[in-house]
Length: 547
Image (cartoon, rainbow, N blue to C red; front, side, top):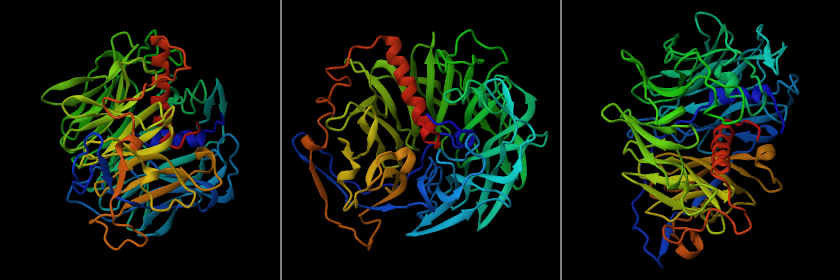
């Protein structure tokens, strides 16, 4: 596994959030032995700036966290590798390929290089608001005087990264905390221009969340200093505090300016790493939080364990996420609001579940291990109860990552949840997105991460000749051929009919088992470790970290 610090920095910048979608056309629900009707899609391969790969994150399409009546500009963002070698390699490369990368904006077939801060080499985007505000990170050409700490060794020469905002064609450096520090990254922005992100201060902290988040790559992270959550507006950056411990990391923001994230609740390390069992460093208890101006930071609590994540928030202030149960051997999805507190959404029977996104209707999606002897998770939808969305025919795994206002869901299927993006709509079953594309030109949709309220999908896939999404994958955009998108060149507006049998033999009631016949039965501890690894792999991969 290739390791580099600059790729990791975006893991701290780009945090899981949720969408605020725009309703799609209603279609009749499918019944057994009936053909299911979907729209064709036109796929646009966004390519690169000359390098091998391009990347996109959770908030890469406008409309997320926006008012349902907000922007419909069709803006998509990401970052692409250039032909310029990164001179900070191999340890400090911005991307695994060690090529400089530039942030981009794509709209109506036109791609624009968003550039970097003066003196900087690389930049990346993380979120675009409904009215076209874009945030992310950019190098500034300076080197952090505080050395990175790797495996106990101090290593100087780390290029500084700064939180940035692209507004009306201008690139704005949001700076760092007033009390000091040299690193920051912007996570999300709303239509009001409020930005949330993280920043590193100058207080030494060996249990820093930057260290804890880095355990898959180094045993001590690059910034052994406190990590704090900020809110920025009109040129002012505010540290919004913690739940009592030294660190807090943001996960998203809604149109009300409410921020969700995770924070240590104290400064005392537990005897066991509840977030990453068996992996150092041992950290304090980590709870999810919600912050609101005038109220401050509220601890959402836990389901009994020492690790929790707030993963998505809607414009009603409802929060979905994941929390360990007592003993930290199992974790389950939760839904929180101020009236009811944290409610355990349960699991599909296998004891493990994690929520990833929530829409304004309070519908929650994620992944859970079924209780039929399966060892791989299945995608779920919760709206009053958990519904197993099954897996694509021939697959053993699925995970739903995004749900829009009309209940359209996208996620990943395939062997071990790798290799095929899916769409679930109209009461299902799920369909392989590749089967809906009019002409792929050899492009394969391997990852479907996000769908906005217009039904437009963004993710990563492999162009013809590429066999590894991580090294040569490209960002794609899929536009549906429907009444909301008239006159799209290359569109076929006739319905796509796919038989239920060929679409997914794993629909509710005919679900394929999660474990193959040749796979031995795992112990509960092994099933837990596999689930956590898959959960955190997606958590990191969506931030363009190396796999």
